Amino acid sequence: MGYRIRRWTDADLPVLVDANVPEMMEHLAGPETPARVRRRHEQYIRGWDSGRPHMFTVRRDDAPVAVGSVGWWESEWDGAPCLEAGWMILPRFQRQGAATAGVRLVVDEARRSALAGGLPTVLMACPNVDNVASNALCRTLGFIDRGTMEDEYRGVPMTLKVWTLDFA
Image 1 (cartoon, rainbow, N blue to C red):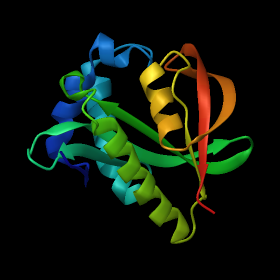
Image 2: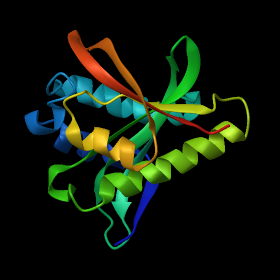
Image 3: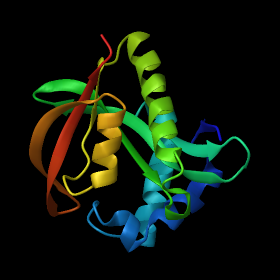
Image 4: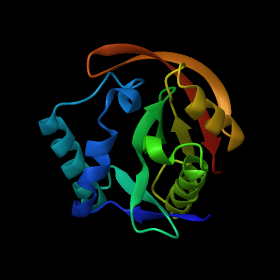
């Protein structure tokens, strides 16, 4: 089964709504309010015009329905600019290769954008240390383990695993 990524559109709000459940938001400070989900959706749409973030839906080649989201945005790591990647695959599509395919595709897209000029050439991913699946995915895709860092997301302190890929 093949996968593809598609630029985030106004029709993709249901992906965020479906993902806004305790089991999906366990490593991201818990579910968000409906208003916050709507704001995130609008940021994903506007990101394409402002350059931040570049969000996509992950889709199976044999079905029009989105199975999750993946994207990248400009960030900072270790005092230097970088790109940061994030992803989320809806529960009913997990363990089917969607995350691996989607992240691989967004890595390729971020690499093309960075090497075209004007963007950092390091891609970082920072899953929660307790997110076994996302950390395993980073390892599988060749990200380099850079240790951990303490951060806060929506007021919740977190310990994150730092993974990087260098496109240069």
